[in-house]
Length: 305
Ligand SMILES: [Zn+2]
Image 1 (cartoon, rainbow, N blue to C red):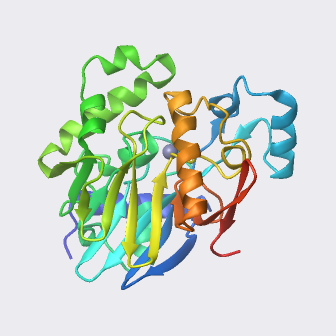
Image 2 (tube, rainbow, N blue to C red):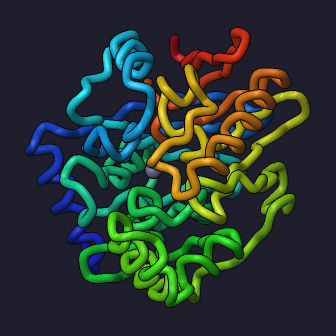
């Protein structure tokens, strides 16, 4: 058996992660008509508290975090990729962090392997947005494409933003490395890329909806078969606690916090009113579940609960 350099790296990465005891193979799934929507873990992030909550009302925030058992010093949000399995298609929503963003993330190839899939089996990778934990897994340590046979699909608005040479100087110091990292990776995979926009049916049964604020071209995806639907919301609903309890609070984790809050409110209202399932990238317990409304607040009800 001959291994190319990509396979060698994927294999070594797998051993290293398993050896460190961090193998997280969380899996939850939902049948949508003839399709399966599966949540696969890419590991988790480790982020300072300020990244999410700087400037929010202290007393209420403390109460919410205590209710959800969230430590106040640092957050360790899970990263849930969505896999859509259909006849003839294996569609991955986002590519994960890869090996260079954080040691606690970048495990998607292990999760796919547990699903019986190799990177070559992925036919499409559809991006919600181009932040590191969603995009950087598109390249391996040799800068080769991790999903060589996949069509990579991204919103035109998101591509335009991250490939704009001005973005690195306008995005702010905290995220300048995100801009450099995104531009480099998008350029490297340009040959595999195709574009879509708000309202497009990007493939049969998958509709793109603009959900801006977290990033300018952030997109969510409605996977529908008749009455059954799942909305892949990416980071438009960015956590399972404050985003549900106080969705109107502007969050630092959104590049445009006010627009992010407007989008979150609209999306939560729609998901609860229409009883549409959702899969959130950083939501707990695999991120697959439903939204329940209680007056002005909401609750995430995980699928496996
Ligand atoms: Zn994210």
